[in-house]
Image (cartoon, rainbow, N blue to C red; front, side):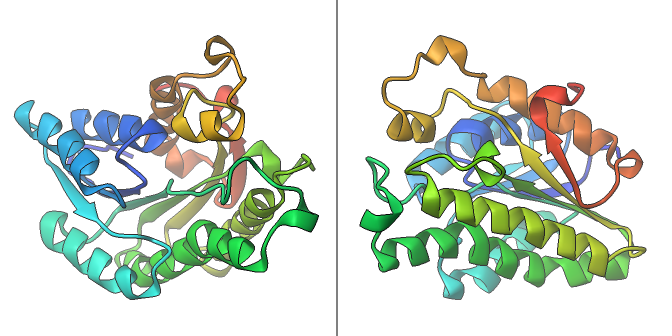
Length: 241
């Protein structure tokens, strides 16, 4: 897939992997919209890219808010046209320090699921039909090794990511043959604020740089037609763009 000219929406794009991916996509010639709950940070990312001559826009919405989804899609489409690529990167850990399941409030579990699972479902539902009608599109779920390994204290986050992965597989099965492709990508442990919030004693030198992971995600997008829809992929095993 040639990324130049493609309309892309990246959630959670004001920092970390989302920011790095937005920058790399814009510099490849994509028309990119980043969305975040942090409007000033998000606008700063987009403004810096526009100053370089790229097409980049910032929106402030909470993907965990049901009422935000259709306004978000409408605003993004008005800025860059019908979406070709959707990256579900926005995510929340829930309360930190991470609690044991026995100490996890039901309301906290619900909130994690709303942001990490239900929000992506609603957002995909809002754009995948139009993608199918056009005969092409790519949806990427950013997942985690916590989806496949049982780490104590990661319960709410892990459950949300496991469900997100299976959601991607079901989307892929139901939309097989339409030209819309779904990928679950495990980025590995990265030097991000989220990782620091979860594991404050971790050595940043042992963690991947978000920009390096973004380069590998770009490589996946460029080769999307050759990768089976519904695949679970580890970023460390992907070839960088």
